Amino acid sequence: MSPTSSASPSTAPAPGSSLNAARRRRELAEAVNGDIVDVLVVGLGATGAGVALDAAARGLSVVAVDAHDLAFGTSRWSSKLIHGGLRYLASAQLDVAHESAVERGVLMERTAPHLVRAQPFVLPLTPLVSRGQASLAWAGFRAGDTLRLAARTSRATLPAPRRLSAVEARHLAPSVRPDGLRGGLLSWDGRVTDDARLVTALARTAAAHGAKILTRARVLEAGGSGARVRDELTGEQGEIRARAVINASGVWAGDLVDGIRIRPSRGTHLVLRADLFGPLPAGLHIPIPGETNRFVLVLPQGDGRVYVGLTDEPVDGDIPDVPEVPESDIGFLLDVLGSALDVPVRRHDVVGAFAGLRPLLDAEPTRSGEETRTSDISRRHAVLTSGEGVITVVGGKLTTYRRMAQDAVDTAVEARRLRAGASTTASLPLVGAAAPDRLGALPAPGHLIRRYGTEAPAVHALAARDPHLNDPVLPGHPVTRAALLWAALHEGALDEDDLLDRRTRIGLVPQDRTAASAAAREALDTATTQPA
Image 1 (cartoon, rainbow, N blue to C red):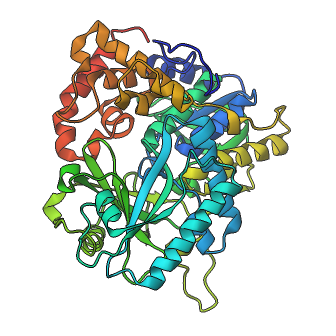
Image 2 (image 1 turned 135 degrees about the vertical axis):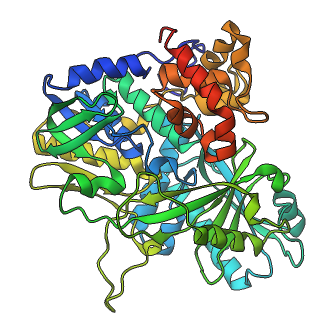
Image 3 (image 1 turned 90 degrees about the vertical axis):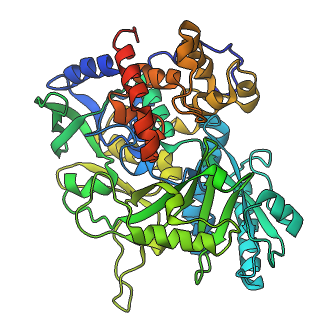
């Protein structure tokens, strides 16, 4: 169904898209020691789920596995921004910048307009921002608008940047220190409601096209013709045979295939309560002292929280499943905040923090022999084939997941001579997608529409059966008990962590996680007694 379809809203999930414990058990049993499939995908972050969708939409048989859950790794730790590539213009990576702008437009206008919308940002011109820096930033924003035009993204989708008077800047950024404020610069970029929800939509859309989406299935070893996997819930092992194996495991890609050199970069965000800032109509760009083209972002989330990030620090040694946030990152972000805000933000105001690891391809040393800073490493992606025939897609970023997936499947189709057509994902709506006018007419609360799109009435309808399900999980938080039940019935959530850390983001604040645990357990118990 296209985003412009006029069909009436359904009270059921998109056909074939429901992921749940029963479907997982059935399809895992079918995949292990079963018939050979066209494509086996390892990793179910944005890129892996995108690969599964791209391949399935071409008519290929697909099994996609992950040792943990959907969006367990890097894909849930982003700034929630769908970037237009402005930063890459500054480093003369014109192809990466254009690709980012194109993919941003695809998400905003065709494939996921329910999840990706325009986000305004104010760069306040405080005394710490020189006139030269302001001129450079303004030139960059104008260049970003040129990228929008080149990508054929509508002006209605992304408004033009403009200069702000001091009064306008104070209106949009009331928490900025007023002393010496001489105005601001307003720019726009793409913003996803929730990066983990985007991955869930990708996986469910792939499932609707016939892909088997199998979480808690760990690959123990892989080759060009399949992999040995272990069911992490039962401990049972078996083989999944495939004509092509695509490694989309991000920062862990080198664990599966020899010769992949990843240089992870840690991006840390703080979680603060929104009432600390007061009204926050726009996000903020706060320049990092001593840097010409790097900013700390203040990102209102619409759920009573604000994210502040991010860092860009190299990570050495073993790669953890969940990166820890060092105090040095927290201190750095608080210091940058303090350089611009009138509101004092102290360590005890930080109610949560998270860090993600960017899967950057290792760069060659500079001519002086020094290693390239991770902030300067190219965000280009690469598709590599090992001697055993495993195809690895790595690098890139959340915004360009779709193009990364397309390139990986193109490589598999050519190398394995699979019978498949060209990619269709640039025009294939994800589960819940619809044009803004149709979304606005849905009979459901706005906070549900922003997370579920055309499925919002179905989520809302759960409460018609039991008004208790309409209760918020936490006071003042938009997630309801119905949303938790929906996640267990249709979004593949198998335990409390899936519900609180990925289908919702309640778990980013430990205090909130504790308060919501009972509701999560109740949803899982209820799901076992209801038909999916």
